[in-house]
Length: 235
Image (cartoon, rainbow, N blue to C red; front, side):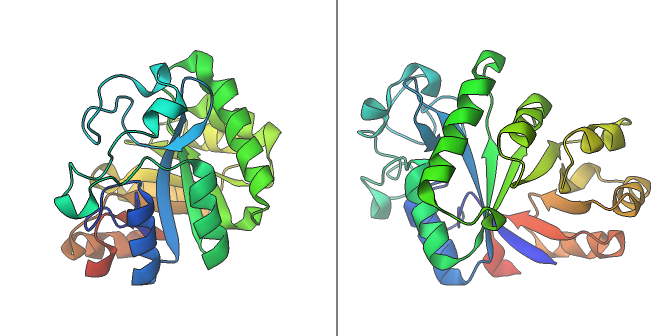
């Protein structure tokens, strides 16, 4: 079972920052998950929330702020004084670390506005192609099915994972539509019969966000392939 560091080593450093990613690498993580969205001027940045209020000293929606302004924000002080002046990284910066260390990166595409899906996917693909990273190191994931459909066309060589909280009844059709690699679902809502159907259809099964090792035991009989966690050091 693979263990993926959720937003980097987010239990030890501010989520989705270079510090969190570097600490996950130092821990020995083989797989890291990050969130990506674009700034007002189309720069792919690594950030989870649609607004900057919780994880920076700024205010406002990411989609309304140009990258030059996002780059000035402190994305570390909210977590602890140790990380004061940690910045919001770009996807390009993260890919350098990932390429150098030969690990797998799960890029979750965050879609706030459906009108931005095309721009988001195109800009992310452009950054990936410019980075010269091996596409086998990358996986796209998203709750937004349309984004994964578009990525299948724009960059078919990168694996695709459909994110769900609860797996829907038409899951197999949706997975076939995107030529999926895996299902990424909330472990709390995963049922045994669903896991069996997913696995028998040939897809990997990844579960988020499992932070207590006690919760991993019920997942073993379901043949879960990957645990996404804030606390990989506990496993």
